[in-house]
Image 1 (cartoon, rainbow, N blue to C red):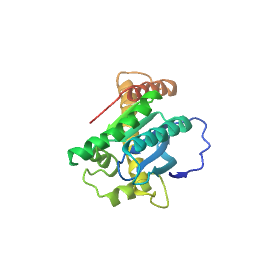
Image 2 (tube, rainbow, N blue to C red):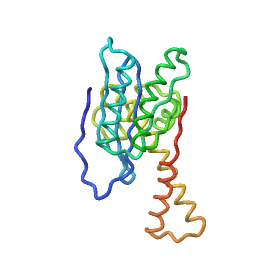
Image 3 (cartoon, helix red, strand yellow):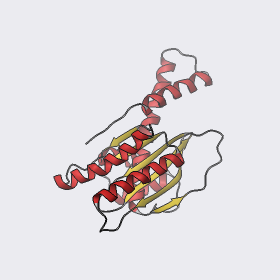
Image 4 (cartoon, one colour):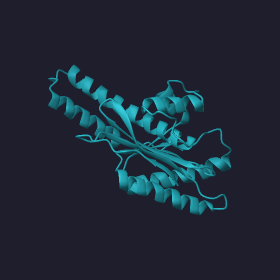
Length: 213
């Protein structure tokens, strides 16, 4: 397993933490963990996992499930974001990749962590603003968003970080909308009430499970 830890930031309170996963069957399964404290995302850890080509499908599924379980136990994410199966794949490959996603979702359910799925186009629109963005463009946008000096390697890890950013953007958008609606309804915009609205919105997003094929 290739993993790159990042020094932990000294923050007073923890923000929204998301584990992004880019599942793969034959290649490497990428993962990345980000955290939003205030308006800026920070990188916690990223990496990839790949078994030898001779490994059976059962062994791959077991090891990927173990990896996600370990990451959840160590970093306690608020949500897990997974890239959905690309519909252009042939049916045999799509079914096997769905099995890989299945063990990721199983690990999330066992840990009572909400899991969310996003299509490649949704991830690209969220991170790059364009649903047909190239892989190179996505890597550049992830690098910029996280304030990194170099593009995260391997590419599978960068893809997983993009999925995590996609979910975080959506969750934060819900949070801002909840605050705006509270103000519109005439609620006094005191720090305590704004914080209460943010927590209520975040809990709503965390409780939403989106399982796409």
